[in-house]
Image: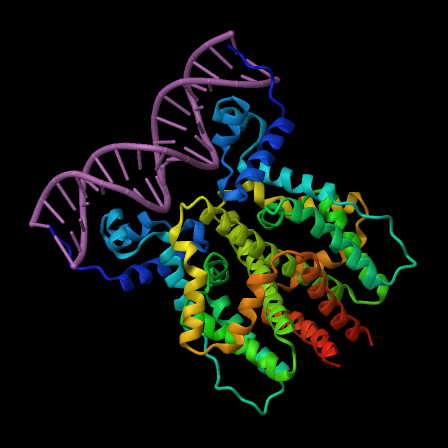
Length: 222
Length: 222
DNA sequence: ACCTGAACACCGTTCAAGT
DNA sequence: ACCTGAACACCGTTCAAGT
């Protein structure tokens, strides 16, 4: 019996659903996608060259979701940058695997290159050299990537612990505290408690990091 | 026939050798390690609880390699931070999988917590609050993690292309240039050429990023 | 044009069994 | 105490064969 035609879009949608449930790109497999769509795993390869091309398509899909407001030239360049990264953050945090997707793919699409171009243009207009502009945007991107890897990792850890599959991971925070106490790592301990209590409102934390970086950049212009 | 006892250290050493050759943590498998040591794959599990614990041990091993100079209190706090991250960078860049190892593990060892404690202490002494200090160190760490993921990714890409296994990856930079040209992404194009020509001397690039961040932090103190 | 089952070469991990 | 082979439940990918 022949199935109704499956489209590439359907595969992407199914992949997003699985990713939303599992949380990590590693847990996304062609076999799971095929299962979800009730097709054979081999069918995937008629629609996509390989897993990597699927990831490319998914990454582009996410970038297209970002709502960039029309270029407001009355705004300070710092606020323009802030606005865009705030929008990126909001999109990424809604699907925490987004950053991992970006890191595992190459920005070889119109949407992704357009976003990079836009950011660099803002810095060029502000008076930075192309080298400075490129370095600055890359640096903020790296910062964001690292932050999200951290967030995703912590989410995954909590996920695994709550499924009580992993008792080893569950006792690691306690072990950290134990080691820190034994060695009188007081500076660490003072921030550790704080870190475990706050949790949420990470957008503010993210924007604080961005602000520090932007303040440093502004110094560079003077 | 019974083999001579294999030690945990031998497993770690073999794992590092494989990682040095392959470049990515994903390409490190228990079977490859076992093969290298001429033991059965199951033997691994007598010495380590699982793959994760091996990674934990390897990550700690790398941090212990970092040469931290004795705390020089005559130095500015900015220079103390610079010195340490420069040392970390040097250690990481010699084994580009190092950063990935850190991101995939939890700092639940004396060496790793000691390093974090040391960094936070410097900022506390400089007059920052515990929250500020913790956020600042985390941010620099995220920046470094993102940077190294980028470096490792690019290395792996070149590696795969040079083995001409992956013709798809090989033409991506050209595709990027094509898209950018078609859409008049001139700001991007101006930095793209530059980016592809320079290559090396990434330590300076890294330190430039750190410097911008430190300049922003200094502003926060005033 | 679109889909399949079977196969290939891999994973991490477990476990009864060996010495 | 230390190691083994065989098995389990997974991967990504290929390919001849079907409709």
